[in-house]
Amino acid sequence: MHLILYDGVCGLCSRLNQFVLPRDRQRLFHFASLQSAAGRSALKTFDHTSEDLTTFYVLANYRSAAPVQFAKSRAALFVMTTLGWPWRAAGLLYIVPKPLADRIYDVIARHRYRLFGRHEHCLLPDPAYQDRFIDSIP
Image (cartoon, rainbow, N blue to C red; front, side, top):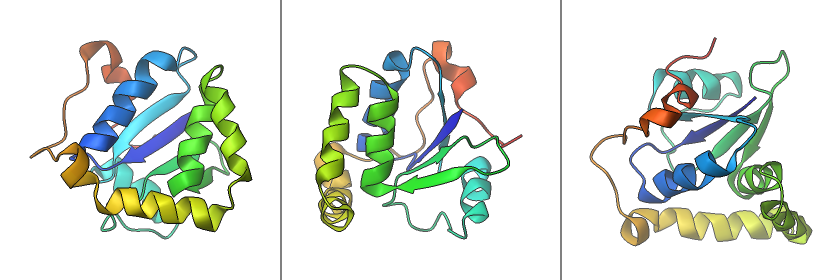
């Protein structure tokens, strides 16, 4: 199981979740907003705080004794390649050097509210996916 940590009020992050949920046929991903208790707790494990809402994280195997953290562009690529075909083809983007890919990510993140909107509060998930959104990490 992998945990996607996202900005709960970001329109782009909301769209990402809406993209992943129906394509994650193996139900490998769980979700927690960075603003939630679960998000703050998960970030603390890696010495991060939820103050920086511009970074998207994935904790691979988050329920294991040794979860692996991916951030920014590498988090996005991990999600895409984990979803399977045809999304796995995004793995070709691993050839882009991480510093360059993260710079591109940062530009998008800096303007995400203007480009994709901002919600006043975290959106509630579709009832069919409610069990994939966690409030606390077991």
